[in-house]
Length: 297
Length: 64
Image 1 (cartoon, helix red, strand yellow):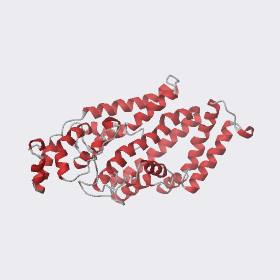
Image 2 (spheres, rainbow over the protein chains, first blue to last red):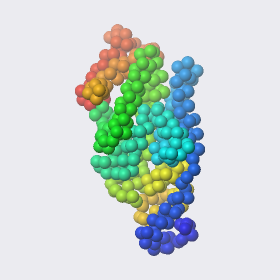
Image 3 (cartoon, rainbow over the protein chains, first blue to last red):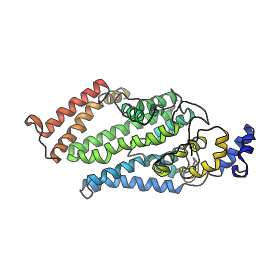
Image 4 (cartoon, each protein chain N blue to C red):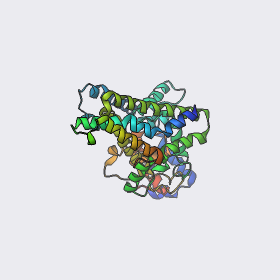
């Protein structure tokens, strides 16, 4: 059954079971297969960021050119890992599961975000989206863009809420896997600072600042804005059809990294990112019948 | 182990000030051909600013 063969009135007349059956049958058509685009994205983007080091340290690439490349690269680092977090590339036991895990681990190295920390806390975000105590990403929620920027800055202070929320989430999970993830997070953080300090004291502070430290902060702001704040704003409701929204951005789909359609991801996390726009348009009549916030999209 | 790590992260703003901001400030001054005030060398100026700023952030829990 396809939404397009039913009128809006017919869809609205379906009972809860009919609606969920229709919704699932449409969504299933967008799942499956390896999202090779995301795999290529991860490998190319990670290569670009690592290549910036020899290129800048050797003086071949000027820092004014490396800085924007590094910022864009780090901003693009999260989403392939996100595909891996949901085991979209391959599931445990499948032949390409190693590739899924490889993409998950390497993609966010520049972001200093360990894969298992991202994966475990992200699952909790899905389970508890917008919950004031249980959603690990709740600290990004804000009244508007300026308030988001103010909070984003506040969250990154030494006593800020962002890192603490992830640590508290892993502690609350209390599993051996969560414990290992906390240890890995500490190793990542110490390695990051150790590398920054080492580069700085060996005469490469500007390279460290403009290829990693500052781009990472700018990229994290962009990622948090479009991946966390915008799709959940105003972040006051809880529930499958109310905790995430569609929205229309003047920047369009690519510059918002596909997040205009993030509602599809929360409903069906195993639909690959690059198929969410098509899935959205196919599911839109159902979402409308469900009373979802579609933001004029 | 956990205590050591927690202690290290507690003073990380100070370490960041001395370990990163200080040489960053010094190398920025040198790159721009500026001189540090009071006849200080760039790295001493960097250590003073980075150290004090890092100490402030460690005590207050905020950089600004």
